[in-house]
Length: 52
Image (cartoon, rainbow, N blue to C red; front, side, top):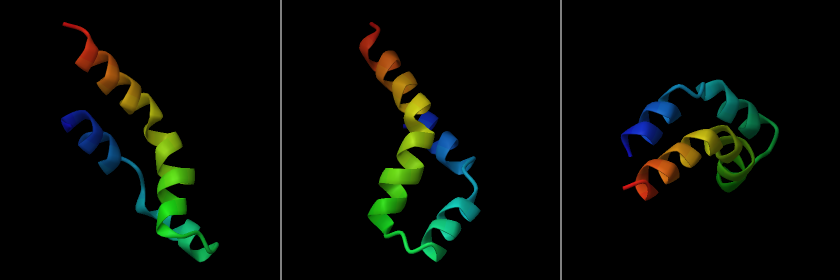
């Protein structure tokens, strides 16, 4: 959880603001912009959780 929180804080708010200006919905911002950006952090959390 802490890894994802720290990673999400580094993503600039201008990305979501620009997506809203372009007409993207909240789900679209999450799915098309945030999810691809946090994919490396999600992989890290997955690996850390499955390694004993």
